Length: 222
Image (cartoon, rainbow, N blue to C red; front, side):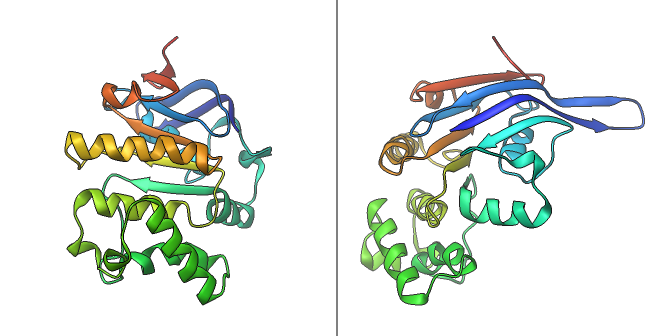
């Protein structure tokens, strides 16, 4: 479960303060696929950074799985990002000189899991998202865009996170492949009992979600 209450993020310039996130409150239950939509500059990316503990809010609360991450110290936040959150990026962010399975193993290595268990779980996750054992040994450059995004999703699932944040996950994919990726995320929300939130400007994707939040000028559109 994700709960956000009266969230504010301000940036100061020489001229004035700008509220990139303006008094946002929302809830997304566990096991639900939700989207946040809005035009460029609406505050989507800033909100995602706050939810992922990549930035700190000016005010407000962000509760994930019963813990308010705004109150956490730096060491707690490092552990929170490692154990509770998975990230899926538009550009995949895979390490090019590592194979698909090695990319998925990385978060588990940081969590201290032994090598054999890391490899077994990475292979299982890749099979789950449709990457065959033969392709698991390929480096990202030898995979299609859709396959790279599947690897990215498997990596996001590595440490059993409670919250998965996807930033324009279909932005570099054709519409047919994008639909497959969205269907995969929807299914994983249920099978992994995770809250999955995708930020997008594509209203077609938002129609696939169980819950959609629309942002305009940093605030939710009622």
